[in-house]
Length: 371
Ligand SMILES: Cc1cc2nc3c(=O)[nH]c(=O)nc-3n(C[C@H](O)[C@H](O)[C@H](O)COP(=O)(O)OP(=O)(O)OC[C@H]3O[C@@H](n4cnc5c(N)ncnc54)[C@H](O)[C@@H]3O)c2cc1C
Image (cartoon, rainbow, N blue to C red; front, side, top):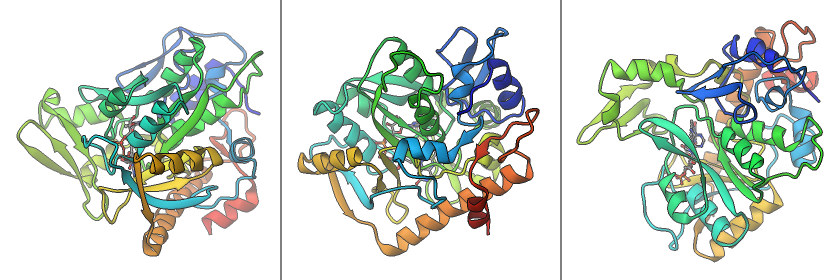
């Protein structure tokens, strides 16, 4: 299992522009801080090994080790990861109709889990102006307040570290695939901390192709409008090809080609589109964005979905075969591109200590995935 020093986190991840601001290295010590979309090491740390490196989703992630821990099965390179079943879903009649990103499946499942004692707290991502802001919530009302996607990378995992320091347990966590990888690494207790108890009882992952670099986005958008006037941002599914920015009484469409240069570098070596290391994964149902695509991966996830349907929190339907083909192709393409890129940049399975790998996986799988 990987462990290395906080200094390596700076040289290997931050200085190589691989950091995706997930927050997994923050709120552990006074040294790493997230500020306006960037993580900075504000003092030099001389520890030989640190949780900050061990929990980082861009530092030597061994997908086979992670899969054995999370799914009790080896990593097999399937485009969608290990799963039990796939459906389409949306908020049921018990849920208030507020502005969700898509069908409100994530908010409905978290509300159901909180109201039925499956979890005592949830770590979600709210916003402050246009900046995403992690938030610990305990009620449906606060869960609904955090609804909708924020397309800027969020330091959500810092809130998990804070919760662990405050000895909170039975937590539900919602996050993007890289955040789910960081959470799974944290839950493996890689530093063998005495008395460690897994604080997470439920993980809900979001599909994600990429997130935007906050600083680059702010520079870009401030040349077009006052940032404080932005109310919401949406990236509708293909073939729209636009980002939609909502202001008070105006909607502005920006071509995705203009947005692509603002994507975080670290996203280009992420092989996971559907948050493979979570109990349940949720994305946009591209045929009808008022619904979600829902992947159930674990027994815990299966039980929660069953309960949520029975209690009116969720409505479930079948995923049409052609939509499944489309999903497989999108997720497979992201995996292939990321693995090819990591390979060409010397970031896959390298043994050179001066240039550590981002990812590790069996060589035979690399051939299958990239053929
Ligand atoms: C950066 C990003 C990229 C995405 N890319 C895709 C994609 O390519 N394809 C696709 O199908 N779906 C994508 N999604 C997921 C999609 O936008 C919806 O989140 C998902 O369909 C759930 O919809 P919902 O109506 O159930 O969510 P809601 O009920 O509205 O809840 C949304 C939840 O997302 C959480 N959240 C919001 N922003 C963030 C963030 N930045 N980091 C962590 N958590 C956050 C909130 O805590 C909230 O609980 C992306 C989401 C994000 C945040």
